[in-house]
Each structure stands twice: as C-alpha cells, then as structure tokens.
Image 1 (cartoon, rainbow, N blue to C red):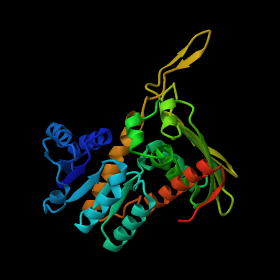
Image 2 (cartoon, one colour; image 1 turned 60 degrees about the horizontal axis):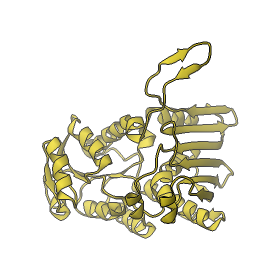
Image 3 (cartoon, helix red, strand yellow; image 1 turned 135 degrees about the horizontal axis):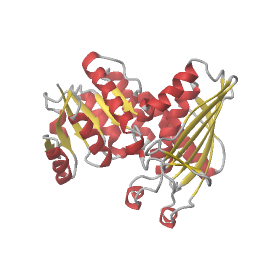
Image 4 (cartoon, helix red, strand yellow; image 1 turned 60 degrees about the vertical axis):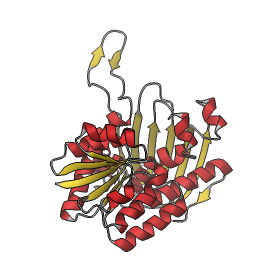
Amino acid sequence: MIDIALFGAGRIAEVHARHIAGHPEMRLAVVVDVDLAAATRLAERHGAAASDDGAAVFGEAAIDAVLIASSSNTHAELISRAVAAGKPVFCEKPLDLDLARASACLRQVEASGVPVFLDFNRRFDPHHAGLEQAVRTGEAGVVEVVSITSRDPEPPPLGYLENSPGALFLETMVHDLDMARWLLAEEPVEVFAMASCLIDPGIRALGEFDSAVAVLRTASGRLCQINDSWRATYGYDQRIEVLGSGGMVRSDNLRRTTVERYDARAIRRDVLQYFFIDRYLESYRLALDHFADVVRHGTAPLITAEDGYRALVLAHAALRSARSGQPVAVHY
C-alpha cells in the first residue's frame, strides 16, 4: 500500500480523503492541518492519525507520498518541503498564489527529480477528455477558437476571499486557463480581460471581482474566450466548445438525471448538477488513480509543476489586464 499524508482538512481534502481511503493501492496514514481538531475529525472518519506538525510528517520514513489540499498560499512551500524529503507530491491547483514563490518552487522541483502532479482535475473528466481526444485526432480540423464557460452557482464565503486576493482569476479561472493551454496545444502570448463585481457588494468592498471575461491569443493567432461567473441560479455551468477548420466539438453540462418530460406546453429536462464536487467527482478519482501509477510505477505525471506555473502566469496576466484595462503580453 502507498501510505499518504494528506495536508488540509477542508472541503476538498474531505473528497481526497474518501478517495484515498477507498483506493485499492493507497492508505490514508495521516491528516495534517494547523487546526488539529479539524484534522482529527477527518482522520477519525478514515482510521488515520492526525497531526499539526508538518515537519515531523515529512521526516517520517513510512510516508510514501504527500497529497496537498491545504490553502492555496501554502502549496509552494509544502511542495518544496516534500520534494526535499524525497516524497512524491499530488497537489491541488493552483501551484501557489504568489508567482515568485511558484517560480522558486518550480526550480526546486526540477532540480530534485521528485515527481510532482498538479491536480487540474478537469483534464481527467471523461467528457472533457473525450473532447480533447476528438480535437487531437482532427475531428474539428485545425483549431481556431476555443470557448469556455465556467460559472459557479454562488460565490465563495467572504472570509475565504479575505485570505485569497484575486481569487476569481487565481483560484477559479486558473482551471479554465489550464484547459485553454491543453486544448489550444499552443501557449497563449497575450491576454485581455475585463471584470466586474455584479453579485455581492461585500465582494466589491474587498476590491475583488465576481464576474469576468478573458480573451487569449497564441502566436499563430488561435483564440480562446473564457467567461467566468460566481452566480448561476440554474446550477454549475461547465461547457467547452472547440471550433476549427473542419467543424466543432463540444462537451456539455451534466444534469442530475437524464429524465425528460414531454407535454403539449414544453419539453423539460432536469436541472444541472449543483457544484464542482458533484460535477467532477469522477475526475478526482481518476486523477488519484494516475498518481498511484506515478508513485508505484514511475509513470511521468500528466500535469506537472510547470503546467501549474504556466497557468498561474496566465491568471496573473489576466488579473493585471482586468485591473489596468489593457491587454497584457504573457512572459513565462
């Protein structure tokens, strides 16, 4: 069994804890969090130990690998400590919030040779993965425009935003920027973004955005448009279209059921799944399967720390553009 140390005890850590505990090749050995009570509650549900001492965990020879699902501003530091201890890493997005910390972390990862998998889990979603495969095999022809819609049903808590400046871009759109890189198969070199606060006056009081549109351009002229919002009253809206010289391929929303109701007035379908834990639950499990192969068999991570860094560079460029009102050239 692969003994895993899980850093973090919040909502996404709970998802990972369930998947680790149910995985045939993994065991949840310890949950680590600065809030020892929270770590203990999560650990007890899965028969694991709890700790608030990360240094001791990194020094424990029995720990085979580390899964980082703590707050985003701790990611780079924890990755650096893990690779210094020779522990393979599965890290939630983003690589960090700060570009300088992320860059230093990337250099350390590359020098260490220790595998680091960055969990942009949407690449493992079977629907988006099927779309990407269709694009790669030329079903849309030469890619010209990628269109990504990503709308949450509600904003995150204000307390979360107080500790995560630029969250709409650095925490939310960073997912879509990674998808853009993946589907364009060519690095964006320029980004122009516009953003507003249309939903919550409390978010405006923090100087943050809750709605944004970004346009990316690659060196060859391929385009990507992304629209993100923290309010979709009808559920979690996740759609991608890829338009090319030979046609279009798309991945659509998932609904709570496939039941349709027909009568003389209308044809009605069920509502969308409500949030990311429902919509992407399978992708988190598949990402963990891949990480097991990375640890057990030396498989190269499909999404690397460099991918995380490049998506973060794009997110910062989009945030600067939104604040300045000007296009921003991207330098990786």
